[in-house]
Length: 143
Image 1: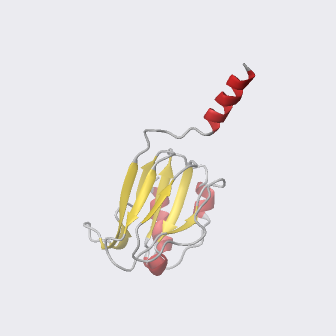
Image 2: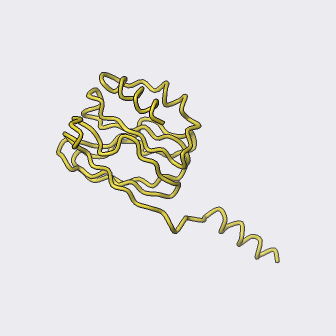
Image 3: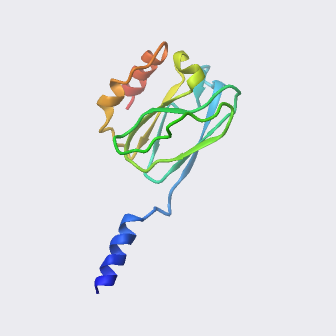
């Protein structure tokens, strides 16, 4: 009986959802709506366990996580320019990311996991530059 409960506890803590989704986000010089230096999605809502793949549709872009939930293990470095990048979201909350070469041009976006915005104050207080200041305010107001 003891072995059964030990096994059950291990399974509960190592559970990975089998219905996880994969989403693609394009890194773009110009989006269909006329916006320049943007990701194809300004705010993407996903569920824990989902994967996002960023595709270098236009040249000169990358992905760099700026802030995420407290317990999230974010990549320590940005992705390489012009390279596909993927990330599995394992903690609920808001993830703010940017294109390093174009961050002052407003090339920032959010991934919101499980519709959880508990870390909104941290995101609001994140220091961004140039056009990203106004874009950050817009993104927050649309949550």
